[in-house]
Amino acid sequence: MATKKKKIVTKALPQKGKRSATLDKATAPAAPAAKTEAKAKKRAAAAQTATAPAAAHKAATPKKVSALDAAAQVLSETGQPMNCQEMIGAMAAKGYWTSPGGKTPAATLYSALLREIKVKGAQARFQKTERGKFARTQAV
Image (cartoon, rainbow, N blue to C red; front, side, top):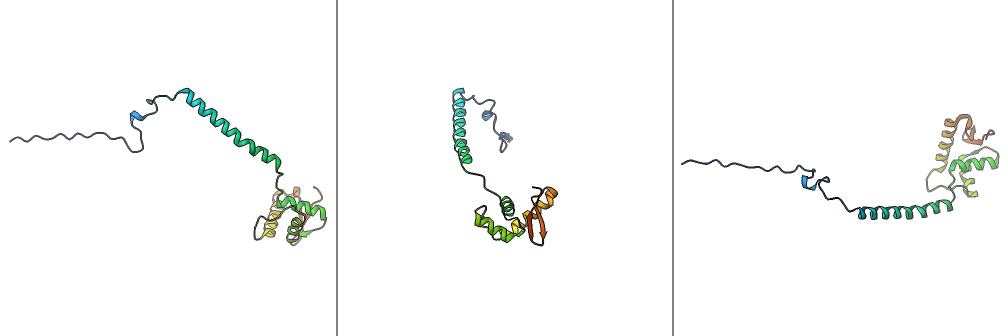
C-alpha cells in the first residue's frame, strides 16, 4: 500500500494593520470631482460661520486686566508703597481686578512682582522699597 503524502497549501494572509491589494488607494476608484468640491465648499462655509461670531465677540469684550497691570495702576494712583494685601484690597474695591477664586492672591501677586523686578531689572514697573512693600518706579 502506497501512501500518498498530502500537500499542505497555505495561503498568505494579509498582515495585521496592512491593507490588501484590492483595498489599496491606488487601485480604488477615484471619487467624483463634484462630491469633493461640494465637501470643500461645505467646510469653508462652516469655518467662516464659526469664526465670524468669535471675532465679533472679541471686539465687543474688552481685554481682561492682569493682576500686575491692576497693581501698577493702584500704585500709580496712591503714590505710596503698599504691601500685597493692601494692593489686592484696593484693586477689588476699585473694580480693576478680582481674584478668580484662588486661596492666596496676595502671595501670587508678591511672586509676580518679584519676578518682574528680577527679569526686567531697571525697566520694571515696580521697585521693592522695604520688606513686603512695593512702589511704582519713577522711570515709567
